[in-house]
Amino acid sequence: MAAKGKDLSQQLVELISSLQEQGILTDYFDDIKDLQDEINPHFVDEIFTIFLRVAEDYRAELTRNLSEPDVNYPEVNKLAIRFKSSSTSNACGLVAIACQELVDASEAKNKEGCLVALDNVNREYLVAKENLNRIVGIEREIYDMRLCRKQPE
Image (cartoon, rainbow, N blue to C red; front, side, top):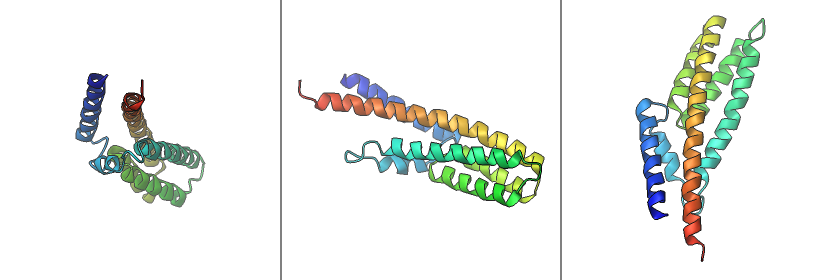
């Protein structure tokens, strides 16, 4: 069982490194991960679960606002800035970049540009979401294996 745990740990390190090299995650992810410890072993899971829930709300609101005949550009701008901030603080680099494109298009009051940027935000978000869920899944497996080793037989 120890070998499998080591394999999972190595798999996690390689996944995170690959995602950082691609820009999907920023190096800030390491800082978030460093906050996880024995006292709070599910910190990463909790942080990203909250982020994903909030991000879904932002995506829904942005979609709703941009489907209106008369777009409320200040509202789109506010939501895009908040989504960018949330993405940045959760180490989702490409999502934050895509959100900045949406901020720029909303400031230009360019509906077509906003729609293209929102498509890009959605695409990058789905990639980030899939990978954050992979990270959390591996983290849970590692935690469960450690817990099983601590259980008396």
